[in-house]
Amino acid sequence: MSGDEAAPVVVPPPVAEPAAIPEDMDLMTALELTLRKARAYGGVVRGLHECAKLIEKRVAQLVVLAEDCNQPDYVKLVKALCADHEVRLLTVPSAKTLGEWAGLCKIDSEGNARKVVGCSCLVVKDFGEETTALSIVNKHIASQ
Image 1 (cartoon, rainbow, N blue to C red):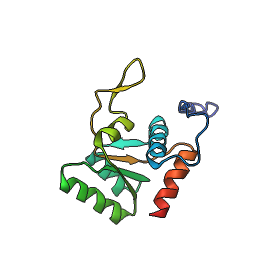
Image 2 (image 1 turned 30 degrees about the vertical axis):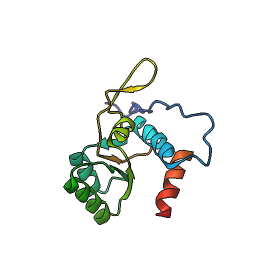
Image 3 (image 1 turned 90 degrees about the vertical axis):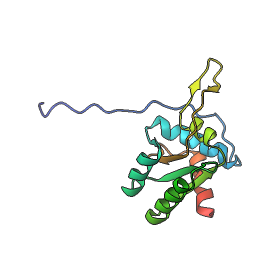
């Protein structure tokens, strides 16, 4: 390669966000929009092994854990890793909901999620761009 050639710049595709996001949206809606944006930027990792690696590398910015995870050792490990490495932790009520937000589903022609696979743990390593939904999530985490 000669010195005149520049490396191609990879720009992630824009994610359509609802036109008007109210400031008083609830946390779960804000978290869903934040995870959708992070997924578009390639910043979401799923599964215990991958999540544990990112937490230990101190790359994880946010960990989302499902409350209905039926393995207590799994929950205990994730919470301990987050506490040891000072990573922010949020919980959601359902693994199926988290799986849908993580992209572990098929979308039918009407835009509804089908064949949703549960996800017990998810790590966000890159939020993408700053949004109103992200600021709502950050405010909630700061208030805990």
